[in-house]
Amino acid sequence: MRAVLQRVSEARCTVDDKITGEIRTGFLVLLGIENEDVDDDLNWLANKIVSMRVFSDENGLMNKALADIDGDILLISQFTLFAQTKKGNRPSFIKAARPDKAIPMYEQMIKTLENLTGKKVATGIFGADMKISLVNDGPVTIMMNTKDKENH
Image (cartoon, rainbow, N blue to C red; front, side):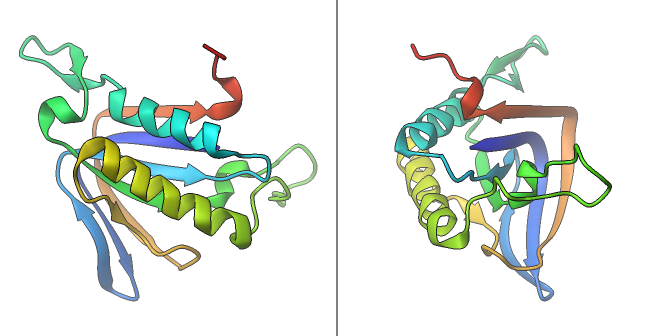
């Protein structure tokens, strides 16, 4: 599982000119799900997202987590995070999970993040042609991969 976290002062997802999800301060999370991903990957990543201390404290240091600033999450499914570009100029997405696996995991990530934050998670629409707009605050962008996590 891969995620790109962007600290935002606002973010919005639209599909067919209709807003499907919108937040103010918080994280825009682009989520890629891989064939081999399991519940442990999902739980590790969800906990990491809500615990990531990248919001500024009163001294301007990145010391605050999402809960500390009452921040929100806009979660967007993005299989292109698994693009393989080694050969040629057309990316391969062979490692990205198919919808029959990815959709339930995406839905579980929404529920897990909502349970951890106690707040509704804004979303896009899985598989739709989405338009994402955001104001990246900082800019702060963090890439995470559950295959890189430590076992403790």
